[in-house]
Length: 213
Image (cartoon, rainbow, N blue to C red; front, side):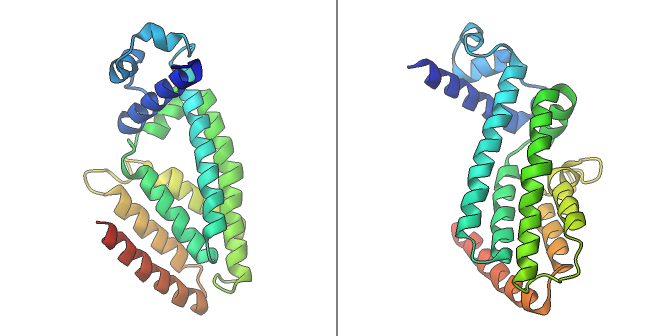
């Protein structure tokens, strides 16, 4: 196996553990045991755990950008795009430990800075673009404060919904929570035309979700 393949294998294995258990609780020994290799082998490709975490976040950002750009190409209109993006985010969060972002913020500042830059530039601009397009298409109210709503939606998805002090996991299912928060958000910005289209997509996506089960 070539060096690049070794590095990718280690990175992917570490990402699996980070997603399931968060970052703080995972050690280099855990990663080595998970992959069935020695810790010495990991250190041939990574300086330390922080190096792995940073590269894992970079990799995540690259994958998310690719997904979002594909969604943008495939979406029929602004509401369809918002539905598709929300589904992608739900899928990402489905099996993700809720402590992951907090671990990054507290223990891995370099990786956290990368995520914050991605969040406040790319993601926010993506939401703002969708809101602006929705206004132009007549689906969203023309008087909505685009910048404020984009910021609010971003914080709800990436921060608020993951705060277990506000939404304890023993009381709130993360997927159901995100679904309700999305429905509340979009219901407040729709025009009559947009509401009809939203209900149409909502019915369709619910049918699609049930057919997969």
